[in-house]
Length: 276
View 1 (cartoon, rainbow, N blue to C red):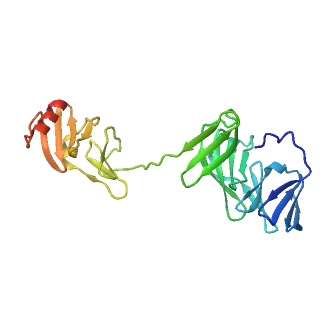
View 2 (view 1 turned 135 degrees about the vertical axis):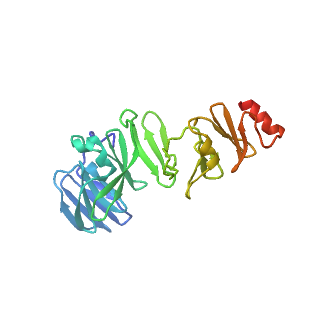
View 3 (view 1 turned 180 degrees about the horizontal axis):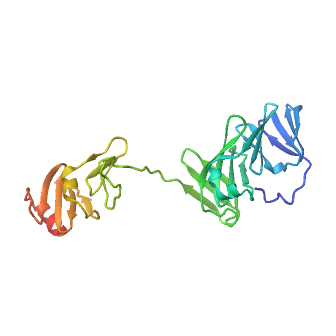
């Protein structure tokens, strides 16, 4: 949006594509010039000049939810916005139009609707698809005037007229499943195991890039107490079933019970006494 939108009045609005190509837009016409010579003109009546923007060197007009593309001397009706925005209740109600934020320096554009922000991407045929960037953020209350989205870092910068700079970074995470037929996929205690695996008190080892596996000894003995687990500095696994302690070195059982250890080293015994 432009803070002078309701103040400025002009007969035409110029949008430069490159040093030789530009468009001039009025309330009813669009003209294209190359080396200052007009080579294209079309009529689009009743459209606000502020609805026009560039994406990937092509001129678009967003009138409410309807998209029109003007490129290579042709007009393409792209239909309504597609993608994530269609799940927005305000979109389905159709009573409020999205607000366009066009960053002409970076050549990117986003729309704001119902406290959600969406990135615009071109589609073949002249349409635009939306990708959700941010939810539950009031752009008006925070006086956001400029937006930049770093697609590589997945980081969103919002410039406020009164509150400085907001920076949002999307955290990467993956949903893992054990793929065991009898698993309920409900996990409380968890421990990092190796470089990219997570061990659970059920004995299920969840892996990021390969199929997970199961520790049979843990699975056979830890039935209901799934709230405690740790891996010590030596890599030994410790978990418990109520008052009974289970210690393991890899697949080998070290301890079962209150101090019944197969290895009676001082470090294991002090660990057992501390836990039990």
